[in-house]
Amino acid sequence: MQQDIIHGLNLTRPKRLITSVDRPNLFMGFETVENAKQKQARALAVVQQVQGPKILYFDRKKEAERYAELLQGQGIAAAFYHAGLDTLERDRIQRQFMANQVAVICATSAFGMGIDKPDVRLVLYLHLPDSLEAYSQGIGRAGRDGQKSATLVLLEPNDLNRAGQFAASVPDQRLIETIFKHPSAYTDFDDPQVDLIEAYIQAGFTQPQVEAQLAARRGEKQKSFQAIAALATTSDCKRTTLLRHFDSSGAAHTAFCCGALTPAVIAQLATGAPAEPIKSQDWQQIFARIFNRN
Image 1: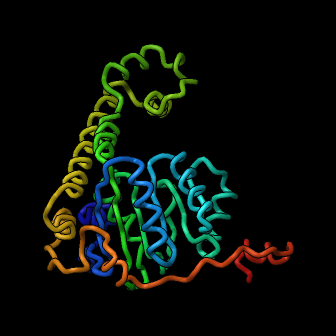
Image 2: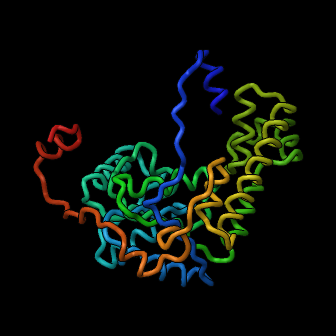
């Protein structure tokens, strides 16, 4: 990637500033539970125990909505965020989270780009992330103020199977051939794989080009799944495993490193700003907040 940047921008003898992806202030938690019921109970307990702003990540929009409702029922200022919401609603929820009016965001991967909240104290995944790159980026939204914060991947046995199936869910050659024979017959098909092939067709790709592109994509997704699954299941130090994937040297294993998110670990975490109640405002105050004039 470094060489691509240098070549693409025609840089001559550039200075390289390269640092490790290691975030020593983040605890890398990984826990396995027996079933969905235990996962829910454990997730709700961790949210109650960790003080400060929190982000919970899901791979399904309905689950993000369901957990937000569960947390609201416990008196926690929670909201859900996913691509199914319109732009104004997403912007409102994001602003409330940044202003500490929402304590917990239950989100899909649609939430996070451009978010630079310094005092997020917990990033909790309730599914296996797509890749080590996605995982590293996601947990990096915690503890940006340098204070000790927690991350946790909470899995049940079926989660690995689901992630593996998703990694293999790239259109095969037979489906590509079928749609290329009669592309107009599938334009209104409600299927993400069909939509992907139709998008390639509309962009002017030939059938051999699409087959090559998707074959490469299938290999990349399966390789990414194998890497993140290896991290989730290894009995070795999670931090060292992650760092070695990014060509970094390992780190010394400490009590605040990786493993189960125990009460002793939680006791070491910094606290973030408490959620503030959303107060009734007149239209001038609302406009001032929307346009950052307050």
